[in-house]
Amino acid sequence: AQSVTQLGSHVSVSEGALVLLRCNYSSSVPPYLFWYVQYPNQGLQLLLKYTSAATLVKGINGFEAEFKKSETSFHLTKPSAHMSDAAEYFCAVTGGGNNRLAFGKGNQVVVIP
Amino acid sequence: DAGITQSPRYKITETGRQVTLMCHQTWSHSYMFWYRQDLGHGLRLIYYSAAADITDKGEVPDGYVVSRSKTENFPLTLESATRSQTSVYFCATSVTQGGGTEAFFGQGTRLTVV
Image: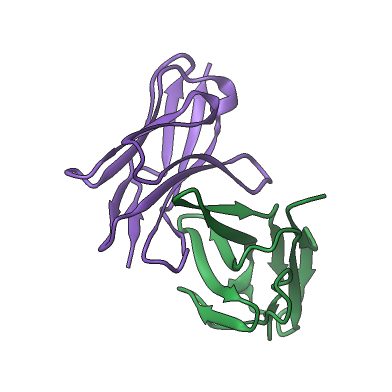
């Protein structure tokens, strides 16, 4: 079975500062990894995904994530936070052929002006 | 509009009542899922379906029933609603293409059980 761990439910970052959200995964098969963003009262929107093509993945809104097999990590970063980045972010993993996504508990990002 | 439609968007029901949440997709994605989202728990899988007439339990299936007679519809029924089922429910589909899997989510149904 696959799982992901996201630490720190709330993350505060100053506007213009680096955004770093950590995700560690556990998978018995080669994983597919995802980051989703959720704005208030909305569904989940895909930020980026890792499908084994490249370890550094670039997504929408200036976000990127790096797959590190040795560390079983897929951390999300953005060099400079914007007020519009305030949202909840979820890391997810799937693999093994059943398409089931296992989600982390999420990080609520607050951007401080 | 193309995509996933969940209805209703908001629902208040009483303890013990049966309630059905609807999910409709305009694609023909094989896989469909129901998740519930609760503070501190993220999204947890309730049930999923690999194809019409094929369903399976997820992490938290107790108290829920699903059916999938048609590929495009995947309703979720709470047989006898309890307050612990107050949550936001998301329907999703997924497809494998280009060597990867991607999931698509509806806007969610906010259910309150009083």
